[in-house]
Length: 328
Image 1: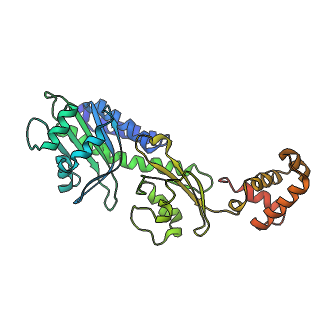
Image 2: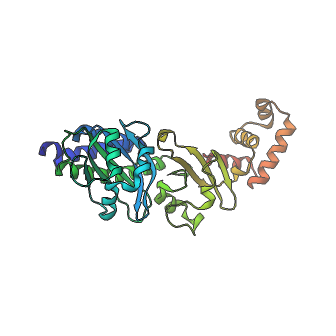
Image 3: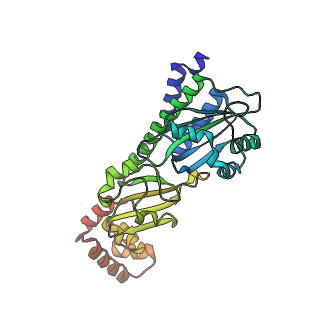
């Protein structure tokens, strides 16, 4: 047992986790970690994601499952008020909550959940983030009446692994932002506008645009955009916001907001941007007209509009403007 859950095994897991954080997003990193823990520790199913536990109950902000039926979350919702594991975590944040279907505390909700999905033993850990609405959790399940309980060493390994996963997911978010050339910050939020990952980066880099903003709930102006995919200009804030369904988070229902400072190019029409890029690339008005299939006078008029909107006065300034504008 010591060889499986000793310092060397944990160090190896953390090293792989941090290496993967450089290559994938937080959801992929969480999925890989849960798979690894299932293999190393030995459990058949799992439920994980981001949740909030307080006196009002449990709020699931985003979740996914491993080897569980598709109705698991909806059924859990029906008995959430009787979740004994959540009650333990509320009473002792940072604790490891366990449940045995055939001994210890029971209630109708827990027995219904366990019997419906064949859950024999459960161990739940949470990477509690002080002052944050959403903390990462993992509930690990061993199936059947004869399944063995989660031993202390296994529980400790689970808890430490989830704590390290929290750090690695933050590293993943930082690594992804460092690859963006236009100064954009990407954050993950749920459908209600509660920030899951990346809020620290947003506050550090672009917090001056929302000085009144506090907490994990996004400012109303950003929340109002979540349901509308695409690029949105907020001239009063001086930012551009791109909303999309995070492609690798299909099962979690998360949204990705990419936010950057506005540039003069953002005020141009799509055609004006095409003309501007071609002119900035050294093409003449005649060349641009031929390439776009329009009259040279049209290109000259659009050029004048581009100069007025961006405040440039020469081809050299135009080239410099477009050379530094990767986001539009």
